[in-house]
Length: 365
Ligand code: MRU
Image (tube, rainbow, N blue to C red; front, side, top):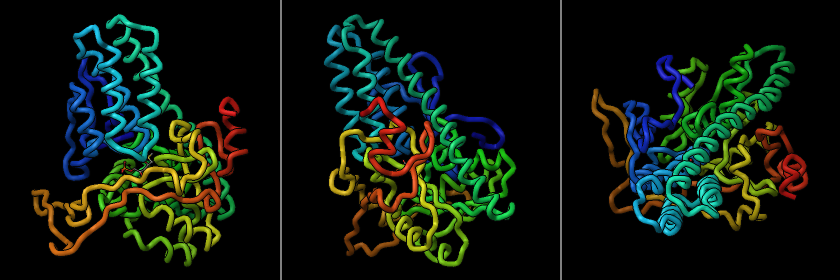
Protein backbone atom coordinates (compact mmCIF):
# COMPACT_ATOMS: atom_id res chain seq x y z
CA UNK A 1 0.00 0.00 0.00
CA UNK A 2 1.03 3.61 -0.14
CA UNK A 3 3.10 5.96 1.98
CA UNK A 4 3.10 9.50 0.59
CA UNK A 5 1.67 8.07 -2.63
CA UNK A 6 4.60 5.70 -3.14
CA UNK A 7 3.77 1.99 -3.13
CA UNK A 8 5.70 -0.06 -0.57
CA UNK A 9 5.78 -3.60 0.62
CA UNK A 10 7.03 -4.24 4.15
CA UNK A 11 10.01 -6.39 3.12
CA UNK A 12 12.03 -6.67 -0.06
CA UNK A 13 15.38 -7.78 -1.49
CA UNK A 14 17.77 -4.89 -2.03
CA UNK A 15 20.54 -6.95 -3.59
CA UNK A 16 22.14 -10.35 -3.08
CA UNK A 17 22.35 -11.03 0.66
CA UNK A 18 20.64 -7.77 1.69
CA UNK A 19 17.00 -7.81 2.78
CA UNK A 20 15.33 -4.50 3.59
CA UNK A 21 12.47 -3.78 5.96
CA UNK A 22 10.62 -0.72 7.23
CA UNK A 23 11.68 -0.21 10.86
CA UNK A 24 8.19 -0.17 12.38
CA UNK A 25 9.47 0.85 15.84
CA UNK A 26 9.97 4.32 14.41
CA UNK A 27 6.53 4.81 12.82
CA UNK A 28 4.61 7.06 12.59
CA UNK A 29 7.22 9.64 13.56
CA UNK A 30 10.09 8.51 11.34
CA UNK A 31 10.20 6.44 8.17
CA UNK A 32 13.42 4.42 8.22
CA UNK A 33 14.52 1.47 6.16
CA UNK A 34 16.85 -1.11 7.68
CA UNK A 35 19.20 -3.64 6.09
CA UNK A 36 19.17 -7.20 7.39
CA UNK A 37 22.31 -9.08 6.40
CA UNK A 38 23.07 -11.52 9.26
CA UNK A 39 20.94 -14.08 11.08
CA UNK A 40 21.28 -11.90 14.23
CA UNK A 41 19.66 -8.99 12.36
CA UNK A 42 16.61 -11.13 11.65
CA UNK A 43 16.40 -12.36 15.24
CA UNK A 44 16.63 -8.79 16.54
CA UNK A 45 14.14 -7.45 13.97
CA UNK A 46 11.50 -10.00 14.99
CA UNK A 47 12.15 -10.07 18.75
CA UNK A 48 12.29 -6.29 19.13
CA UNK A 49 9.46 -5.69 16.68
CA UNK A 50 11.17 -3.78 13.90
CA UNK A 51 8.80 -6.06 12.00
CA UNK A 52 5.71 -7.48 13.63
CA UNK A 53 2.33 -8.97 12.75
CA UNK A 54 2.04 -12.72 12.32
CA UNK A 55 2.35 -12.99 8.51
CA UNK A 56 5.27 -10.55 8.26
CA UNK A 57 7.12 -12.31 11.10
CA UNK A 58 6.82 -15.53 9.07
CA UNK A 59 8.10 -13.96 5.85
CA UNK A 60 11.00 -12.32 7.70
CA UNK A 61 11.97 -15.65 9.29
CA UNK A 62 11.89 -17.33 5.87
CA UNK A 63 14.40 -14.77 4.57
CA UNK A 64 16.40 -15.21 7.81
CA UNK A 65 16.83 -18.90 6.98
CA UNK A 66 18.05 -17.97 3.50
CA UNK A 67 20.57 -15.47 4.89
CA UNK A 68 21.82 -18.04 7.42
CA UNK A 69 22.55 -20.36 4.50
CA UNK A 70 24.01 -17.60 2.33
CA UNK A 71 26.49 -16.71 5.09
CA UNK A 72 27.44 -20.31 5.86
CA UNK A 73 30.85 -21.27 4.62
CA UNK A 74 31.13 -24.73 6.12
CA UNK A 75 30.00 -28.06 4.76
CA UNK A 76 27.86 -28.45 7.89
CA UNK A 77 24.96 -26.55 6.36
CA UNK A 78 22.20 -28.71 7.82
CA UNK A 79 23.38 -28.12 11.41
CA UNK A 80 23.77 -24.40 10.72
CA UNK A 81 20.21 -24.23 9.47
CA UNK A 82 18.69 -26.25 12.28
CA UNK A 83 20.39 -23.90 14.79
CA UNK A 84 19.13 -20.90 12.81
CA UNK A 85 15.63 -22.39 12.87
CA UNK A 86 15.72 -22.77 16.66
CA UNK A 87 16.96 -19.23 17.15
CA UNK A 88 14.31 -17.74 14.87
CA UNK A 89 11.45 -19.76 16.36
CA UNK A 90 12.50 -18.66 19.86
CA UNK A 91 12.09 -14.95 19.04
CA UNK A 92 8.31 -14.72 19.55
CA UNK A 93 6.05 -17.53 20.80
CA UNK A 94 2.45 -16.73 19.84
CA UNK A 95 2.34 -16.12 16.08
CA UNK A 96 2.34 -19.56 14.47
CA UNK A 97 3.35 -18.21 11.05
CA UNK A 98 6.92 -18.00 12.37
CA UNK A 99 7.20 -21.74 13.00
CA UNK A 100 5.25 -22.48 9.83
CA UNK A 101 7.66 -20.46 7.64
CA UNK A 102 10.79 -21.86 9.27
CA UNK A 103 9.49 -25.42 8.91
CA UNK A 104 8.66 -24.72 5.29
CA UNK A 105 12.31 -23.72 4.77
CA UNK A 106 13.59 -26.78 6.61
CA UNK A 107 11.44 -29.07 4.48
CA UNK A 108 12.96 -27.52 1.34
CA UNK A 109 16.50 -28.49 2.24
CA UNK A 110 15.78 -32.14 2.94
CA UNK A 111 17.82 -34.39 0.66
CA UNK A 112 20.13 -31.57 -0.44
CA UNK A 113 23.67 -31.31 0.85
CA UNK A 114 25.40 -28.94 -1.52
CA UNK A 115 25.49 -25.33 -0.32
CA UNK A 116 24.68 -23.55 -3.58
CA UNK A 117 21.47 -25.43 -4.40
CA UNK A 118 20.38 -25.02 -0.75
CA UNK A 119 20.89 -21.26 -0.86
CA UNK A 120 19.02 -21.00 -4.10
CA UNK A 121 16.14 -23.20 -2.94
CA UNK A 122 15.76 -21.21 0.28
CA UNK A 123 15.69 -17.95 -1.63
CA UNK A 124 13.12 -19.26 -4.08
CA UNK A 125 10.97 -20.54 -1.22
CA UNK A 126 11.27 -17.25 0.71
CA UNK A 127 10.08 -15.46 -2.44
CA UNK A 128 7.21 -17.93 -2.83
CA UNK A 129 6.12 -17.39 0.81
CA UNK A 130 6.28 -13.61 0.23
CA UNK A 131 4.23 -13.72 -2.98
CA UNK A 132 1.71 -16.13 -1.45
CA UNK A 133 1.23 -13.89 1.56
CA UNK A 134 0.47 -10.91 -0.65
CA UNK A 135 -1.95 -12.90 -2.79
CA UNK A 136 -3.67 -14.51 0.19
CA UNK A 137 -4.18 -11.13 1.82
CA UNK A 138 -5.58 -9.78 -1.44
CA UNK A 139 -8.05 -12.68 -1.57
CA UNK A 140 -9.05 -12.09 2.07
CA UNK A 141 -10.06 -8.64 0.86
CA UNK A 142 -12.05 -10.02 -2.07
CA UNK A 143 -14.03 -12.33 0.26
CA UNK A 144 -14.34 -9.84 3.12
CA UNK A 145 -15.62 -7.16 0.74
CA UNK A 146 -18.86 -9.13 0.32
CA UNK A 147 -19.59 -8.82 4.05
CA UNK A 148 -19.13 -5.05 3.93
CA UNK A 149 -21.18 -4.81 0.74
CA UNK A 150 -24.10 -6.59 2.40
CA UNK A 151 -24.03 -4.19 5.34
CA UNK A 152 -23.81 -1.17 3.01
CA UNK A 153 -26.84 -2.48 1.11
CA UNK A 154 -28.84 -2.95 4.32
CA UNK A 155 -27.92 0.60 5.35
CA UNK A 156 -28.96 1.97 1.94
CA UNK A 157 -25.48 3.25 1.27
CA UNK A 158 -24.99 5.00 4.63
CA UNK A 159 -21.49 4.84 6.10
CA UNK A 160 -20.39 1.38 7.23
CA UNK A 161 -18.53 1.63 10.54
CA UNK A 162 -15.84 -0.99 11.02
CA UNK A 163 -13.96 -1.46 14.29
CA UNK A 164 -10.48 -2.99 14.28
CA UNK A 165 -7.93 -3.77 16.97
CA UNK A 166 -4.13 -3.57 16.89
CA UNK A 167 -2.54 -3.47 13.45
CA UNK A 168 -3.67 -6.25 11.15
CA UNK A 169 -2.90 -3.94 8.26
CA UNK A 170 -0.40 -4.11 5.43
CA UNK A 171 2.40 -3.32 7.88
CA UNK A 172 1.66 -6.67 9.57
CA UNK A 173 1.85 -8.58 6.28
CA UNK A 174 3.67 -8.14 2.97
CA UNK A 175 0.89 -5.97 1.54
CA UNK A 176 -2.90 -5.37 1.89
CA UNK A 177 -3.09 -6.62 5.50
CA UNK A 178 -5.63 -9.12 6.77
CA UNK A 179 -8.32 -7.15 8.65
CA UNK A 180 -7.63 -4.10 6.48
CA UNK A 181 -7.77 -5.87 3.13
CA UNK A 182 -11.61 -5.94 3.07
CA UNK A 183 -11.48 -2.26 4.09
CA UNK A 184 -9.18 -1.33 1.19
CA UNK A 185 -11.30 -3.40 -1.20
CA UNK A 186 -14.47 -1.69 0.07
CA UNK A 187 -12.91 1.72 -0.49
CA UNK A 188 -11.86 0.66 -4.00
CA UNK A 189 -15.46 -0.49 -4.63
CA UNK A 190 -16.73 2.97 -3.71
CA UNK A 191 -18.42 1.95 -0.44
CA UNK A 192 -18.70 4.69 2.16
CA UNK A 193 -16.67 3.39 5.12
CA UNK A 194 -15.29 4.66 8.39
CA UNK A 195 -12.88 2.76 10.66
CA UNK A 196 -12.73 2.90 14.45
CA UNK A 197 -9.09 2.26 15.34
CA UNK A 198 -8.40 0.90 18.84
CA UNK A 199 -5.18 2.51 20.10
CA UNK A 200 -4.03 -0.91 21.40
CA UNK A 201 -1.96 -0.35 24.50
CA UNK A 202 0.76 -0.92 25.44
CA UNK A 203 2.63 -0.58 22.13
CA UNK A 204 -0.17 1.36 20.45
CA UNK A 205 -0.03 -0.46 17.13
CA UNK A 206 -3.52 0.89 16.37
CA UNK A 207 -2.75 4.54 17.09
CA UNK A 208 0.73 4.39 15.59
CA UNK A 209 0.49 1.96 12.69
CA UNK A 210 -3.13 1.38 11.65
CA UNK A 211 -3.91 5.10 11.82
CA UNK A 212 -0.73 5.84 9.82
CA UNK A 213 -1.68 3.32 7.15
CA UNK A 214 -5.26 4.48 6.84
CA UNK A 215 -4.22 8.14 6.76
CA UNK A 216 -1.81 7.48 3.89
CA UNK A 217 -4.57 5.63 2.02
CA UNK A 218 -7.14 8.39 2.68
CA UNK A 219 -9.50 6.06 4.55
CA UNK A 220 -11.76 7.94 7.00
CA UNK A 221 -10.90 6.74 10.50
CA UNK A 222 -11.01 7.72 14.16
CA UNK A 223 -8.56 6.57 16.83
CA UNK A 224 -10.20 5.56 20.11
CA UNK A 225 -8.73 4.36 23.39
CA UNK A 226 -9.08 0.68 24.04
CA UNK A 227 -12.11 0.88 26.31
CA UNK A 228 -14.40 2.79 23.95
CA UNK A 229 -15.54 -0.05 21.66
CA UNK A 230 -18.25 -1.37 23.97
CA UNK A 231 -19.82 2.06 24.33
CA UNK A 232 -19.83 2.61 20.56
CA UNK A 233 -21.42 -0.78 20.01
CA UNK A 234 -24.19 -0.07 22.52
CA UNK A 235 -25.04 3.09 20.58
CA UNK A 236 -25.20 1.57 17.11
CA UNK A 237 -21.93 3.09 15.97
CA UNK A 238 -20.23 -0.15 14.95
CA UNK A 239 -21.59 -2.31 12.12
CA UNK A 240 -18.89 -4.96 12.05
CA UNK A 241 -15.68 -5.83 13.89
CA UNK A 242 -12.80 -7.20 11.84
CA UNK A 243 -9.54 -8.19 13.55
CA UNK A 244 -6.48 -10.21 12.57
CA UNK A 245 -4.98 -13.23 14.28
CA UNK A 246 -1.60 -14.48 15.41
CA UNK A 247 -2.74 -18.06 15.69
CA UNK A 248 -6.15 -19.62 15.07
CA UNK A 249 -6.76 -23.23 15.98
CA UNK A 250 -8.44 -25.40 13.36
CA UNK A 251 -11.33 -25.50 15.83
CA UNK A 252 -11.75 -21.72 15.54
CA UNK A 253 -10.19 -20.28 18.72
CA UNK A 254 -8.41 -17.03 17.91
CA UNK A 255 -5.25 -15.67 19.53
CA UNK A 256 -4.83 -12.01 18.75
CA UNK A 257 -3.52 -8.84 20.39
CA UNK A 258 -4.48 -8.43 24.03
CA UNK A 259 -7.97 -6.92 24.32
CA UNK A 260 -9.44 -8.72 21.33
CA UNK A 261 -11.41 -11.06 23.60
CA UNK A 262 -13.15 -8.12 25.32
CA UNK A 263 -14.16 -6.70 21.93
CA UNK A 264 -15.67 -10.05 20.97
CA UNK A 265 -17.66 -10.17 24.23
CA UNK A 266 -18.99 -6.68 23.64
CA UNK A 267 -19.81 -7.52 20.03
CA UNK A 268 -21.83 -10.63 20.91
CA UNK A 269 -23.71 -8.72 23.63
CA UNK A 270 -24.68 -6.12 21.05
CA UNK A 271 -25.43 -8.50 18.19
CA UNK A 272 -22.59 -7.12 16.07
CA UNK A 273 -20.75 -9.49 13.70
CA UNK A 274 -17.22 -10.25 14.87
CA UNK A 275 -14.97 -11.50 12.05
CA UNK A 276 -11.36 -12.61 12.08
CA UNK A 277 -9.30 -12.22 8.90
CA UNK A 278 -6.35 -14.56 8.47
CA UNK A 279 -4.30 -16.38 5.87
CA UNK A 280 -4.07 -20.17 6.27
CA UNK A 281 -0.45 -19.81 7.47
CA UNK A 282 -1.99 -18.52 10.73
CA UNK A 283 -3.99 -21.71 11.32
CA UNK A 284 -2.56 -24.11 13.89
CA UNK A 285 -3.53 -27.57 12.66
CA UNK A 286 -2.35 -29.29 15.84
CA UNK A 287 -3.93 -27.41 18.74
CA UNK A 288 -7.62 -27.94 19.55
CA UNK A 289 -8.04 -25.86 22.69
CA UNK A 290 -6.73 -22.36 22.04
CA UNK A 291 -7.45 -20.90 25.48
CA UNK A 292 -5.42 -23.54 27.28
CA UNK A 293 -2.79 -24.43 24.70
CA UNK A 294 -1.70 -21.33 22.76
CA UNK A 295 1.45 -19.85 24.35
CA UNK A 296 0.88 -16.22 25.28
CA UNK A 297 3.87 -13.91 24.94
CA UNK A 298 4.73 -11.82 27.98
CA UNK A 299 6.81 -8.82 27.07
CA UNK A 300 8.99 -6.36 28.95
CA UNK A 301 7.07 -4.37 31.57
CA UNK A 302 8.75 -1.21 30.24
CA UNK A 303 6.17 -1.25 27.45
CA UNK A 304 3.48 -0.72 30.09
CA UNK A 305 5.47 1.64 32.31
CA UNK A 306 6.46 4.07 29.56
CA UNK A 307 4.71 5.78 26.68
CA UNK A 308 6.41 7.14 23.62
CA UNK A 309 5.42 10.17 21.61
CA UNK A 310 6.73 13.14 19.75
CA UNK A 311 7.43 16.45 21.47
CA UNK A 312 8.34 19.12 18.95
CA UNK A 313 10.74 17.30 16.68
CA UNK A 314 12.01 14.87 19.34
CA UNK A 315 10.64 11.39 20.00
CA UNK A 316 10.44 11.01 23.77
CA UNK A 317 9.57 8.27 26.23
CA UNK A 318 7.86 9.14 29.48
CA UNK A 319 7.13 7.03 32.55
CA UNK A 320 3.43 6.74 33.38
CA UNK A 321 3.49 4.12 36.20
CA UNK A 322 4.95 4.78 39.67
CA UNK A 323 8.42 3.33 39.96
CA UNK A 324 7.30 1.35 43.00
CA UNK A 325 4.45 -0.45 41.18
CA UNK A 326 4.77 -3.72 39.37
CA UNK A 327 3.31 -4.09 35.90
CA UNK A 328 2.48 -7.09 33.73
CA UNK A 329 2.55 -7.19 29.96
CA UNK A 330 0.52 -10.02 28.41
CA UNK A 331 0.69 -9.41 24.67
CA UNK A 332 -2.13 -11.63 23.40
CA UNK A 333 -5.40 -13.22 24.47
CA UNK A 334 -7.57 -15.96 23.04
CA UNK A 335 -11.13 -15.42 21.86
CA UNK A 336 -13.04 -18.70 22.00
CA UNK A 337 -14.61 -19.86 18.73
CA UNK A 338 -18.14 -19.47 20.12
CA UNK A 339 -17.70 -15.67 20.09
CA UNK A 340 -16.44 -15.52 16.49
CA UNK A 341 -19.02 -14.95 13.76
CA UNK A 342 -16.70 -16.15 11.02
CA UNK A 343 -13.18 -16.49 9.67
CA UNK A 344 -12.24 -14.65 6.47
CA UNK A 345 -9.52 -16.65 4.73
CA UNK A 346 -7.96 -16.62 1.26
CA UNK A 347 -10.34 -19.45 0.29
CA UNK A 348 -13.51 -17.79 1.53
CA UNK A 349 -15.49 -17.07 4.69
CA UNK A 350 -16.33 -19.92 7.05
CA UNK A 351 -17.73 -20.51 10.52
CA UNK A 352 -15.20 -20.72 13.33
CA UNK A 353 -15.52 -24.45 13.86
CA UNK A 354 -13.60 -27.57 12.92
CA UNK A 355 -16.05 -28.84 10.28
CA UNK A 356 -16.25 -25.53 8.41
CA UNK A 357 -12.50 -24.92 8.54
CA UNK A 358 -11.76 -28.42 7.25
CA UNK A 359 -14.35 -27.98 4.51
CA UNK A 360 -12.34 -25.00 3.20
CA UNK A 361 -9.03 -26.84 3.65
CA UNK A 362 -9.92 -30.49 2.84
CA UNK A 363 -6.24 -31.42 2.36
CA UNK A 364 -5.84 -31.05 6.14
CA UNK A 365 -8.48 -33.72 6.95
O1 MRU B 1 2.58 -7.87 18.68
P1 MRU B 1 2.25 -7.67 17.24
O2 MRU B 1 2.25 -6.24 16.81
O3 MRU B 1 3.09 -8.55 16.35
O4 MRU B 1 0.76 -8.19 17.14
C1 MRU B 1 0.08 -8.14 15.93
C2 MRU B 1 -1.33 -8.57 16.03
O5 MRU B 1 -1.82 -8.96 17.07
C3 MRU B 1 -2.11 -8.59 14.76
O6 MRU B 1 -3.44 -8.30 15.01
C4 MRU B 1 -1.99 -9.99 14.17
O7 MRU B 1 -0.65 -10.38 14.03
C5 MRU B 1 -2.64 -10.12 12.89
S1 MRU B 1 -1.65 -9.41 11.69
C6 MRU B 1 -2.20 -9.54 10.15
